[in-house]
Amino acid sequence: MADLSSFPITKRWPASNPDIIQLYSLPTPNGVKVSIALEELGLPYEPHLVSFGTNDQKSPEFLSLNPNGRIPAIIDPNGPGAKPLGLFESGAILVYLAEKTGKLIPSDAAARYETLEWVFFQMAGVGPMFGQFGHFFKFAADKVANNSYPVERYRDEAKRLLSILESRLQGREWIMGDEYTIADITTFPWVRGVDVFYGGREVLEFESFPAVMAWLDRALARPASQRGLNIPKRD
Image 1 (cartoon, rainbow, N blue to C red):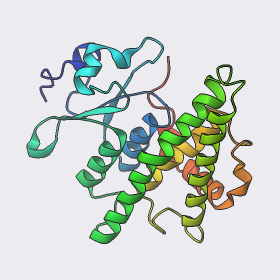
Image 2 (image 1 turned 90 degrees about the horizontal axis):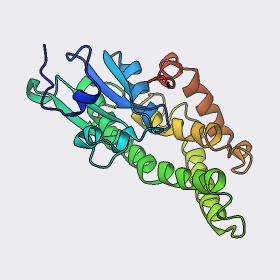
Image 3 (image 1 turned 90 degrees about the vertical axis):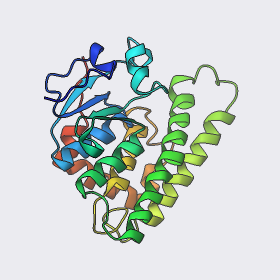
C-alpha cells in the first residue's frame, strides 16, 4: 500500500485507497477538467470535495499541496520512478495524465505541440477572461452598475476568444480534428460554464458561434463528460 503520509493534505482528506490517484477538487469549470479526463482515461481515482463555502482551499493542508490555493490538485501514488507525485494547476495535470497514459494527446510530435498550444490558449485566455467576465457580469454587477467598462471589456474579449474557437472548429469535430484531446477537455467546461455558472449565453451571443455550440454539444454528450461534470459531488 502506498505511503502518502508525507503529504499533509491527506490528514484533512484521508485516502480510503492510497494506491489510486487522489483528486482534490470541486465541480467548477477548472475542477471538472481533471475528473472528466480521469473518466475518459479510465484511471481509478478517489475524489475529495474542497468546499469554497468553508474556504477549504485556503486551509494549511490544501496549501501544502497547492500554495496558490486553487483547485484542482492531485496526488498520484504511482508517479515517475514509482514515487508519489503531487500536482496542481489543471493544465499541468491534464498534460501529466495524457503523457502518463499515452492517451488524449497525439503521439506525433508536431501534433502534440499543436495540442499544447490550444491547452495554453485556454489556460491563458479562455479561463481568465471568461472568469473576469462572469465576475463583473454576475457577482459584481452591483459594484459596477454605474460603470459599464469592466463588463464590456471582458464581454468583448470573451467574444473574441469564442470567434477564434469558431474559426478553429470550422469543418472539425474536435479542436485537433478527428481526435478528441486534452485541448477539448480543458476548454469546453469553460464554454459551458460561462453559460451555466454566469448566465452569459445571450450577452455573449452564443448563437453567433454555431461551430462552437455544436462542438460543445458533442463534448457534453460523451459519457465521461456527463460523469465528470458532477465529480466530486457537492455536499
